[in-house]
Image (cartoon, rainbow, N blue to C red; front, side, top):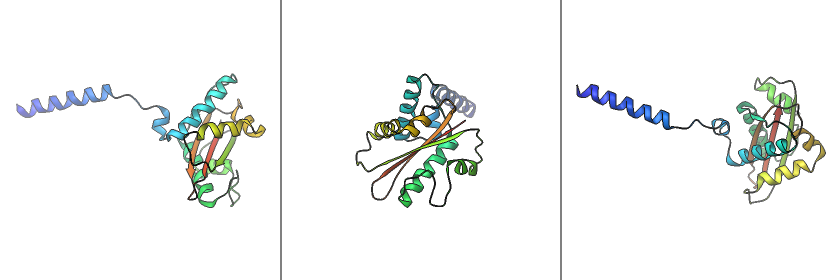
Length: 163
């Protein structure tokens, strides 16, 4: 009888916990850092301001973006093509991500204050015609954002856009 009561109490506690726990946001489920989420939120705010739909986060594209940022940080370069000649489309295809359109924005800075990284990246992209066009294109529906820091303190940001 005691075992039955203990089992029922355990089930009741588990049910209360499950019902009271909020489902994670897509950003939390993807494991985006605060910096990556801030960049995504700012990009989506700019898209909404321009009359576009916000981009949905793609966990797999975020992994690819983070990988490219890490590669740039480790090998100290800033380019859409890696030193091996691999571009955004190849990186995404390499992770079995299918798409009909692809774009990429990259950014780097060496500010020690990373608190305002999202603002600086978005300002940089908006100030560049090609990056601005990519960020505000209606052909993209999903995105992945990745941030990495090199051993010399430089911060690299990659945002991949897909449809």
